[in-house]
Image (cartoon, rainbow, N blue to C red):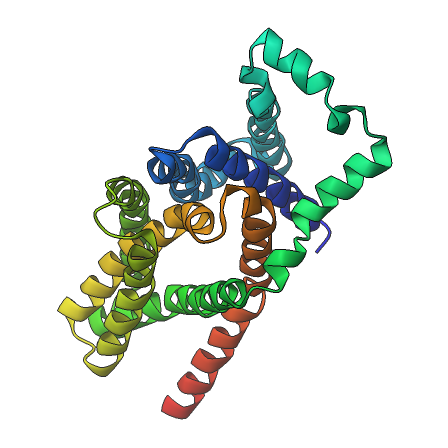
Length: 285
């Protein structure tokens, strides 16, 4: 467990701040900017497993991980490029801000204000916020379950493990496309962003149910394509939908809670689905 805990903590620290900054930097193209930012994670999911396999095979485990660690450290100069909104103020505006009572407040007061933005009492008493979190819980549990379910269904329908691997690759490619298209469509303002979120969440669930009832080639491919595309759209729309529902000032608390839930649900969902598949195999045997 110890080799995985530090990277997990580091990952949680690298994904949150850039997303929150994006919601502050952009207004007109906020969803598209978020989608573009998240495409990096999607590409990484496709490329990094092959990269690590090649590095370990070429330079041994220790050498391969050392090289990969050096690549990951490029996050440090990338993080240094992030700037607070005050960076873009004029000299006159910066002087006015420095003379304000908030700037002259003691550290304890500033810390209390910052903590209040993370643990927002108004947000925690809002029924809409708990409805939002409930939707995320169901969605994320279902998403990880589908990632286990579809490859297994691919093996049963196609009779080949290589086809199951291909299905996972199709999900990854469609996820990349979905993150870009979802953000672009949301910024057109033709369809409300929460409606797009509902489509991104609901349609894959319906398709997977159909695939389970009618496990044929067409439904399996349809599940892989739609799950990838609409799950990617869902990820891209998550921060902008938080802004739309609760306001930009609530993003640190709202998205922070959402990210915490998504991380926490990565633990039980694959375990539950794995136990279900194991029981199903025992019954079939």
